[in-house]
Every structure is written in structure tokens, then in C-alpha cells.
Length: 83
Image 1 (cartoon, helix red, strand yellow):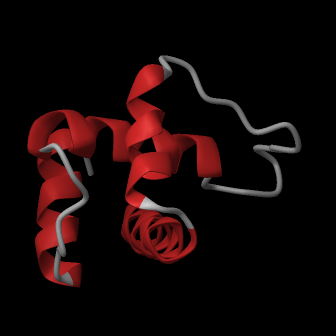
Image 2 (image 1 turned 180 degrees about the vertical axis):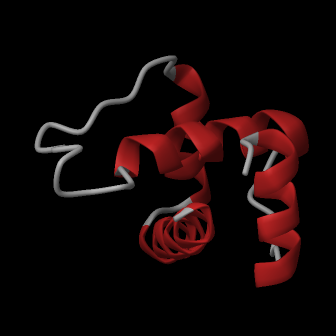
């Protein structure tokens, strides 16, 4: 299940990078809390809110969203998020 979380977060971050401008992505750092309106833990293992919190962590560390390879992202995820 943890491995699936890595993959979903990787996919969500890729979608954010393709869909938002750098300024919109950087604006994430202005927020401290994130939520999913429709999240149901009985039906889902991942949330977009979790991914946005991870993006904020990466932005605070790097100042931008780096071009992680899938393997580098999984390593980063394991070191900073767990699993």
C-alpha cells in the first residue's frame, strides 16, 4: 500500500506541474492546512490534500519542484514522509 502512495503522489505532483504556473505552485507555501472535501478513507488510500502538503514540504526545502526521477521521488518520500 505504501508503494502505491508513492506512485499516486508522484502522479499528482506531475499533474500539478503540468497544470499550474510556477507562481500558482509557489502560492501553496502561503497555506498551512489542506483538505479534501470528498475524501472517504473507506474508499481511498490517498488524497490530493496529502499531495499538496508534500508539495509544500518540497517547496520549502528546494524553493521549487525539482524534476525528480520516479526512483528519486520514492527515496525522498521515504525519507521525509515515511514508508
